[in-house]
Length: 117
Image (cartoon, rainbow, N blue to C red; front, side, top):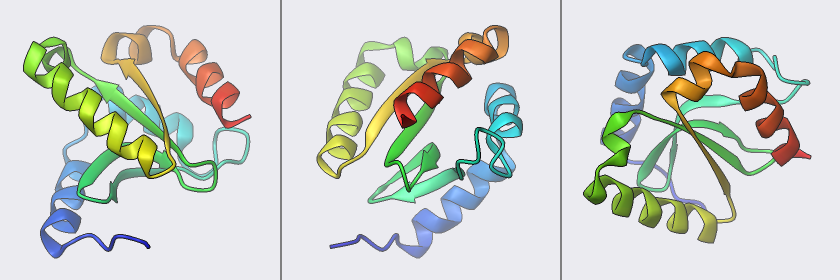
């Protein structure tokens, strides 16, 4: 059964697309228009009650780009729960820190491609 996102979630996803972080913007430039080996990615895509940073639906892969706030204990717990839920829905989840995306883009893209298979 597919979960249809509420209007509020869809509106929030649109807002997130307009307000991307610099690291998200940089990664999107590499992924958009099938830029990574022809794989189609969506950005700020609703899945269930969550909005994921990037998603390749065909490969069931979610890519999250995390800032400093994700190092806080409460946020770590939230992220672990979120990852668990996404995995139970059949998605694999990759997480990268903002610094990794900005400073090591080639390694990030290689990790994403390796996960896609």
